[in-house]
Image (cartoon, rainbow, N blue to C red; front, side, top):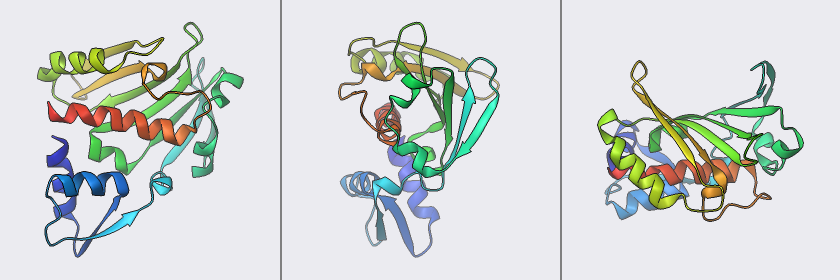
Length: 189
């Protein structure tokens, strides 16, 4: 499925296509760039035009819209502000079949949790669960998965602490890139 999504994106572009380095490398490996001029984009700019907002976890009150620079905070930002969550929308999520992403510090388990919409059909439930169980294996790894029939999207919550390269000092944008890239592996179901 990821290959189909990247191929569709490439064919929708006119004379040249803009891809971040990770997507460009993937497209090259899949043989999707024959005769296509590619402008490489730096990964750091991936979310430059993203919509980022902070909210209150308890009341869901809007606390503020943030610029791209907010994503350069270390994830420990949420350790210091336990009442806040971040919500992020980006056009680049479409390539990996992910809807908007939220991030917060879990009060009970003390983990950093990502919540996202996963654009896969309901029939892939067993494959999704198998993928999660095989790939979320760090300390504090856990997940919740529920299909929303009205939206046709999987609601997925998982602890970042379960990703192999997780560290609390990493930048929010890097963790968002990792978490969406992690789920791009599901697109081969």
